[in-house]
Amino acid sequence: MRPLVVYLDQNIWVKLLRAKVGGEHQEVGDLLGAMQQAVRDGIAIFPLSGAHYMETWHRRKETSRLALAELMKSLSGFATIAPAQLAFRKESEQILNAILRGAHPDQVSSYDGSDWVIGHGVDHAFDSPTGRLRIVESVATKEAPEGRELQPPRELLELIGELKRRFPAGYEWWSLSGEGIEFPDDGFELHTQHRRGDEYVDEQNRLAASIADARASGMEPRDVVVAQYGYWLYNSLLDLAASKGVDLRLVAGWLVENYPSLTGVRLLIDQAAPTSSVALALTWEKHRNPQWGWNQHDLADITSLSVAGAYADVVVTERQWAHALVASGAAKRWNTRATAKLSELSQILDSHDLSQ
Image (cartoon, rainbow, N blue to C red; front, side, top):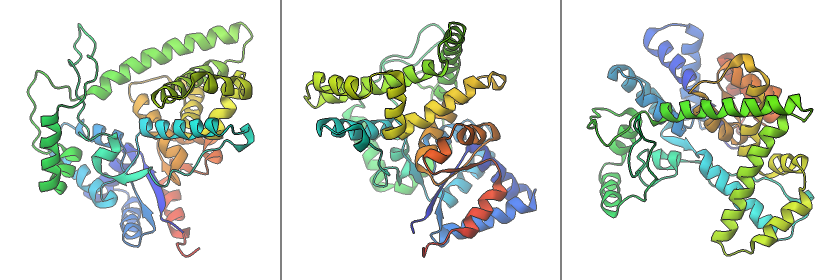
């Protein structure tokens, strides 16, 4: 049996750090020791996501940031889980291959992703040769949005490549901890996640209005969310087909013939697009429970949990997301154990037998 892939949300990492540094909550401290032993014994891996890299840099106090990064390094070994954009692309490729085979809907399914979901380092976490760094035409300001994304210049790629060759451990450590980071005020944006999170809240509020309109007109309100994710998936398939020189009429015809309605769209997503399936489920659960409200952190949460909820064995996250993964059926569909309780993680590690 392979090691368990255990995804810990950022707040869980912080809770572990408090137990380690402050000696609070003896049971959490004991669990941390068990987790370290599980890593040494090959029983579990605790991968980081892009969200961990971004949120760790947001800790302003350097001593706290470095302590958290050190804990993450020691448990993860810089193992990282694929970002949503890579998972989405891989799943789209799988569906396109099924279309080119002329597969019957009963033959369309997802795959385990074991060859690409877990990788090493910041480059894998962001699916980028420049790691966490993005190159854009201009950074966002209060007066203007972010400029279009650019391909990294050759000189930058060569510089980063040299850093990786000469100082691989240092490159990974800096990317996670931001130790000694000093960027000029102009030309760099360190808190892109916060800005995008605010924009995401606006998008979800508009989506909530559309859901309310659908409910008032007697439509199935969840279909509004299904339509959005279906639109993204279908466009991804058409763009991918175009890039490979595939006749778009073949792709569109297969989709219309086999998945002609929103019910069909949801079926395709739940059959063959695990990342979209989990993201759709979480998005709908949040809209279905308006008392939760939307905040800027939800974008990072849904983006990272969409991959972890589909491909990790265990997800330990905050209560609302653990509930959403279970209540929506996503955890059961993708055979993921979702919990907000560290005590459950202790039981899971104790019961995992590599020999089976």
